[in-house]
Image (tube, rainbow, N blue to C red; front, side, top):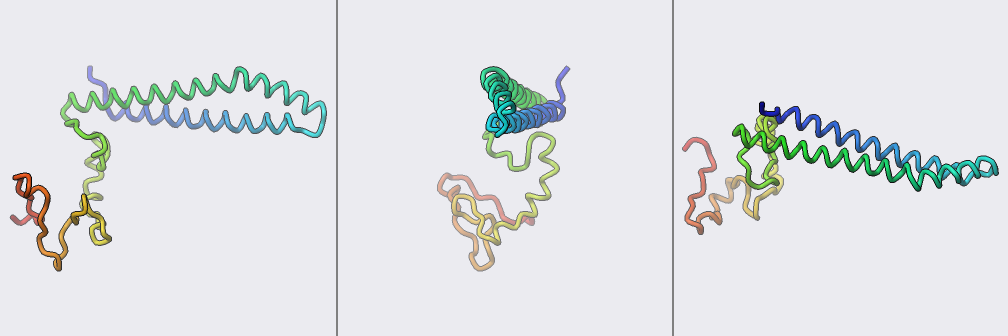
Length: 158
């Protein structure tokens, strides 16, 4: 049975959220214990110092190890989801940074957003070449002409 990539990614996201929450809890507890160890009351300060010593020696590193383990498990689930997507034909592989549409089945949800992108009007470009040439610019030479690959038409009417 092939695992569902969407569910694997959801579980990975839940593990990352749990690791983040555990890290925040760890940080907040550290601050509370430091504050207790600096108390003006001698009894509270002594108790705070003992708790802080124990916290620093055992609990703090253990919570860090657990948070790291959650993040490592999330990474393994993401890798398993990627493998499942490639096996099912939903993801063809290639450059990992090219996922501007999103991952796997999520990509189809972002196609309209990317198609409606108006960054070209604000100076966005790829490698110094405009996303779409303006009317005043005409059709500029593209580096693919030097490679022997025709530049695709900018309009869909051809």
